[in-house]
Image (cartoon, rainbow, N blue to C red; front, top):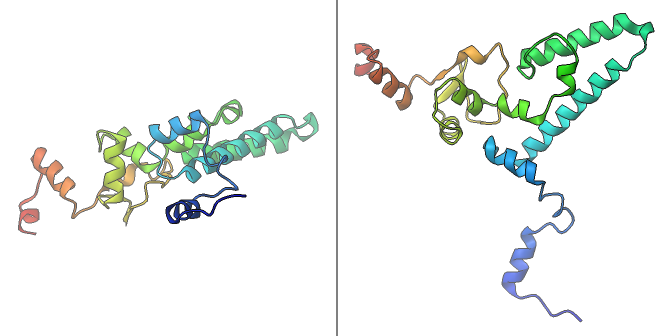
Length: 185
């Protein structure tokens, strides 16, 4: 016979999912990646792992095609490499070997906060995530508030501060590039 649960115990059990609690724990490598890349949601990392796994499987299947379909294999491999290079996930378009070593960390490195650190617009990932969430950064004409945005290689040059951002004004003041017209506004 089990005793009746007290009120606070019932409240705690409402938040607990007894079905998937083991799967939600994650591995040590996963926790390290979540901390290293400042991922707010574990689901993002799980999705990146699944995408990387499917790209690796596709590259393996293309590699294992027979010699009868060499033209098809070359065409598909070139398309896959072009797509991954355009997204910034691989460094070169030369061979499928780079696709077979694709990891979830490559997706994490293409997130907007990581690119802000790479472009030296932020000192650390923590600051970069804060800047993005507060709406200080825009990609092209769009203001971005989601740090999970994956930035393709073609759009990487269009990452700037929002015009009304205090951070942009501080940077312009520091570089002595602030216009007198901006002072009046």
